[in-house]
Amino acid sequence: MKTDTKHTTNDLLKTYFGYDRFLPNQEEIINNVLNKKDTIAIMPTGGGKSLCFQLPALALEGTAVIISPLIALMKDQVDALKANGISASFFNSSQPSEEQQTVLKNFQKGELKLLYVAPESLPQLNFILNSIKISLFAIDEAHCISSWGHDFRPAYTQLGNLKKQFPNTPIIALTATADRATRIDIANQLSIPNANTFIASFDRPNLYLDVRPGQNRNKQILNFLSKRGEQSGIIYCLSRKSTEKLASTLKAKGYKAEAYHAGLTSEERNTVQDAFLNDTTPIIVATIAFGMGIDKSNVRWVIHYNMPKNIDGYYQEIGRSGRDGLAAHTILFYSFSDIIMLRKFTEGAANEEYQLAKLERMQQYAEALSCRRRALLGYFGEHITEDCGNCDICKTPPKYFDGTLIAQKVCSAVARLQEQEALGMVLDVLRGSQNAQVFEKGYQNIKTFGAAKDISWRDLQQYIIQLLNQGILEIHFHENGRLLLSPSAKKVLFEGKKVRLAHINQEKNQVASEKTPRKRAELFDQLRNLRMKLAQEIDKPAFVIFSDATLEDMEF
Ligand code: ADP
Ligand code: MG
Image (cartoon, rainbow, N blue to C red):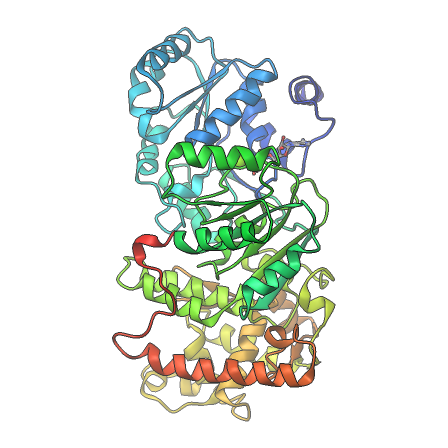
């Protein structure tokens, strides 16, 4: 029986999609759906999520209903399916009503293998859903259901009723957002607590990870582009205005570049997107409005002109390059003033603390002194043992020392605090601070109290951030940012795993790209001064915003 199914799925893969083998995790996920089990599939962008519902839709009896947030995305996928001889349609508010009627008719007759629908339009299908055989519900971009996620869509919350209404129809939720808490939230919101969760590796070894100081970005970009010929690439900016400004700068220098943001009409956006897809316009300067679900395999580079507001978004955006598996270059311009601006825009948000914690983690990544990929993957709960050799830090590493003892002390403090405390308290305990909060909780009596009092507060803080970046510690973002021990922490504590730490004070990663020692020293001073200035300004009620952007202009 089992070999039979295998035979069929392989045949379907070949016949309808033209592929010889599955990408990692696809087969397991597909089999789970074919066994009518609820499924959560976490796969990176470009990991091949669509196939995980498209193939079962063909194998199972009835019509699969795919909930998809983007109208453009639906159309692309339906066109591709039709081109492969599969009967598919989409249903959304952008269609003329005659077209909607035709789709509904075909759907009702059970003639479709797949129907794509926007979450907002799902209620209109209700009367048919009850009268025909539905093979499965697929919720694409399922992080949209979580108000913690970065593109929350209110209509997604209605999907919680699907399982109650159709208890016997399997649901598959797919996303590239792997944050553990978001994953759990998806299961809860969809009422599929027993779903099997599949998490594909997030590693994209072909992406070179490069973080650079934000000074002279335009010059750095022009320099970078001068070596890139007609290669396709995306530059992400925070504000609409800056996308337009930068696009015209590039055009003036002879590059084929266009701006893209949510302020354009949908016609304008389609034109720009199409020109990018067919390589007429190789360079897009965009806000994050650009790219969700874009399937272009030969994007060779992605540049973040501004700091993204969290690692989830950053990883999705760089993930749009190198989807063909060939080398791609990603550059993040690190700028402290961007961080100030992003902080400003989280003020008053319902989940302000959470957003700030995520932003802080983004900043820590940018300031990392150890392998970037380890830091990124660690953030997604994936722990690799070797440095990647394909990031700026691995290319020019800082000086390390044996930090095993410090790491052991920190991990042991986190363990003795029962993983209940955030960075600040862990620091206080390790440094033996005699403050009211410590005494209130009786922490002066625990064994690691004062264990690292010989290290300055600031240095110890930096070491702990390094442990975060090395994936030894994790942050529980949804619970006051308390620190958790990762599986590697247990190796540090119990198996004598060695830990390297970088000497701090170097600010190496930000300064390293400057050629001469003098330039590096200058930049270092500049950065330090800027930081001190900003640190003072942060506490003022109305501090300076270092940009001409307004909230309305921002897309993040
Ligand atoms: P995601 O939704 O996870 O970002 P997609 O479903 O858009 O990814 O798939 C990304 C690309 O991978 C598409 O071009 C798709 O055709 C291709 N792909 C999917 N499955 C396979 C496979 N088994 N073998 C080769 N390519 C595949
Ligand atoms: Mg997709």
